[in-house]
Image 1: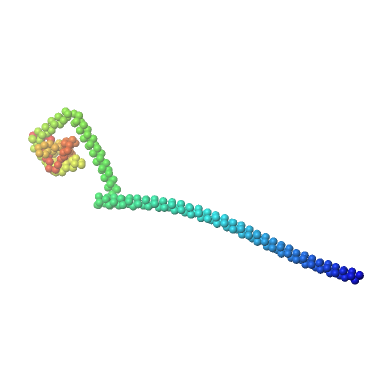
Image 2 (image 1 turned 30 degrees about the horizontal axis):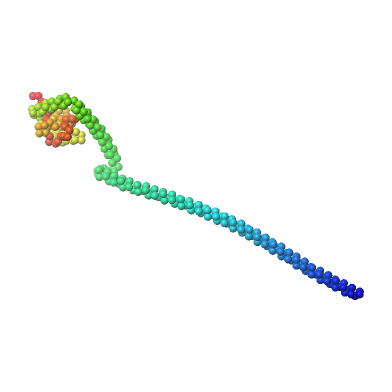
Length: 265
């Protein structure tokens, strides 16, 4: 019995030792599994963190790409707008250039015309010449206006007063009468219709004086009256008396000139 007890004790101790060793192995395995699990969890956490970091970077990169795309799109739109503006500016410049070319051609034509008009002077002298011509033109216009005014007043006066016509006709008749007994005779050698003066082929040697009044006749008819303006020895410049030449008529080279009043003997 005692031996059986010992045997059972040994068996129990052996079983206890076996179970203890088994439990230790299980515990050790559990510790190893726990460490593996912790390591895996840490690795998984690190992997998750890396993925999150990569995700964040990807998100930032996507946002940056979107920003860059937006900037590029805005830049493209700005470039397109700028291109349109530049094209409009180029069109304006082209139009202005065409105008300048046309004006240049007009100026060149004008310069050539000026050269044709004034072949004997330099181009830089033209301005002075033109100014002198303008001043002369103003003077002529003023004289013409004065003459037109005078003619208008004379015409109105003659139209209003028939008695003046009779008086003028009487004076003409008297002049014609004087013509018949007039022994002085000269010839009109030149006529300037613009300035209303003539040149006659007689002067101081023919007995003319600055106060001498002259008649112009053609075919025995009175065509105008003259007043001496300048005397030379054998030539005289005489102004055509305003209103003495009939409307539509004019003095001519070759017309005869006689004294308005016959010299007394």
